Length: 159
Image (cartoon, rainbow, N blue to C red; front, side, top):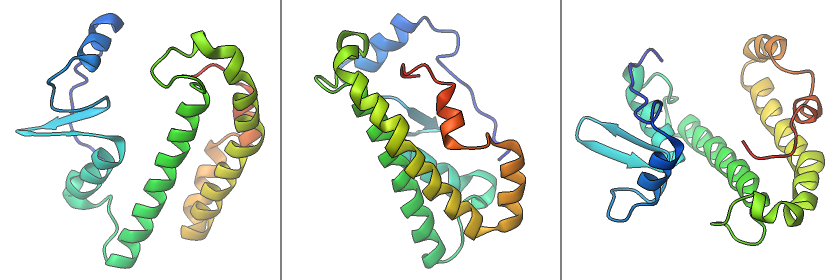
């Protein structure tokens, strides 16, 4: 959207960023976080909504209640995909590392890759296709041929 920003953790060691993320008495619970002037936000959906409403004069948020609600619905679907993706890598303890529970996570990862994620991709593709066929055609030319092909390239470890 042509908005200038600064990635404050880009040059920070992972351990320093993690220590900040887990510190007490900070203005947010967990990353991601966004500071814009004196406003500090966290939580992915809140940040996306704020950017959509304020970047480029609000051009990223559709006009009118019906379209705005549809955008909110799709945003919540993205949040659901993210939550499912996170939780499957942490089936025993959400706060423990993936590697400490990788064996327990394996069946959940396989199910997600083979069943859940393709269904989510199918849903999002149908929404794009019905929203604007010309945009869908352009995106299809840039996208992998299928959700399965995209996941086939993944090694099963979380990003």
